[in-house]
Length: 282
Image (cartoon, rainbow, N blue to C red; front, side, top):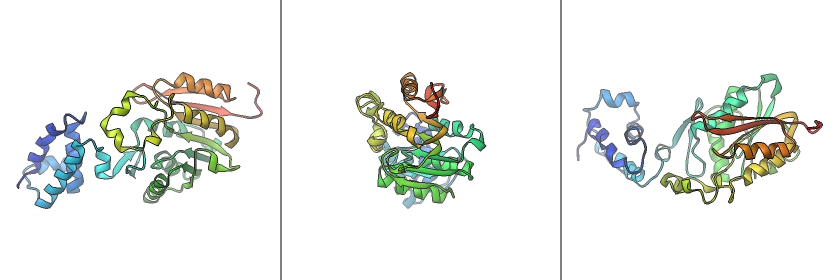
């Protein structure tokens, strides 16, 4: 069998039933196989692929046609200004989650000396902040061994100083307190129709679904974070597109103040930031 780079690029139609960006998927997969940039593809469109690379490409194409995410085929995903190793044990970092990093970095540097990322997954948030603020003491928790292993590997490859602890949300923190708590917990309802998307079957459901109302994880984090925040400490939470008012209400009823809602890159309600001070009377 013989095929050029140009021939391969014309196979995008094979992915139209599974992908919103079939041409880009083909390009990314081919770049991964060749170890080249996307610009290389068009300047070498007449080049023939060796049989070994063709075999590898068509195996990855078959997996993509079955719904496997492109990032699982390539093994990496860009987030903020870092590159992360990604596998089925962790949620694929989404662009909208970069909002949490932006909000954390917007805080006055002298007000934050320590932070924890609850449910770190691949380590995307914790590692990004550890690199941007090397003077911060950064911790991160996750309940699964696979996630902790992946996050530690990502921290090492990105030269980030993060302390990882395995456990459920705040439970492994003992009596530790922080100036900032950040979390992108699961917030999808168990019966949400979006869960039928083919790619989601390759991601850990524990990182996506939070009981029947989608608020169980957020509720637990809001309640338990209070004992792990220094006076005046902040909490930043990602949530579902229709949960902003409920999350704000839960924060208010638990004694948080200075509650503000924020929108993501698609102008969708996506995050809330608040402060907590046990001595403050609301």
